[in-house]
Amino acid sequence: MSEQGKQFCIKCGKEIIVGAEFCSQCGARQSEFQATQTNLTNKKLGLKGSLNLFFDDLLVTNTRMNRANYWWAQLGLFLMSFIISFVVGFFGGLTNYSNLYFFLWFFASVYYVIIAIGGISASIRRLHDTGKSGWLFLLNLIPLIGYIALIILYCQPSIMKEEGYQIAQ
Image 1: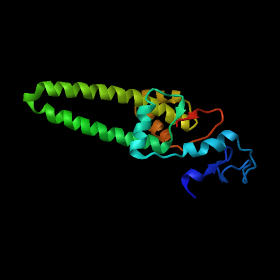
Image 2: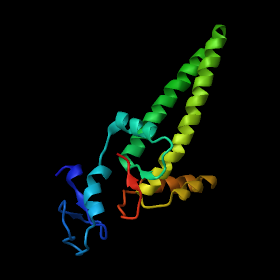
Image 3: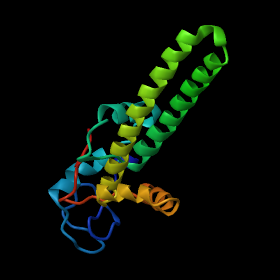
């Protein structure tokens, strides 16, 4: 069975038949929300699709971002940042092209500000997908321990709740 054809119980988390009204393990009634939204949550877009989702929802915090899309976007942003830093550093070594260097430095600075804002938004959406409050992002204010705690939270699987946030499409 493909990943997109799976459905999990909202109470016990066991895999159940897609579209089932009740869980065969614990007997909990499954909601319409969970039955219709499961496939969207499991949608994995890959590197390019995850970057598109990241930039499309740059300022959106009231949705979700599943684990695979979050980490693919982080990898893509790392690669893009590495390339931009390499280009700016390369032209920084060429003193004859100071105007070009200034333009590239300015472009890189704007890019990093956009990425910082989008990174906060993506982190909040990832926390929403794990069933946690986006305010937990403030754990970043605690040096080292906060970073480790957030990485652990970002690695948690998605949790579907009726009262949760909508799924980004």
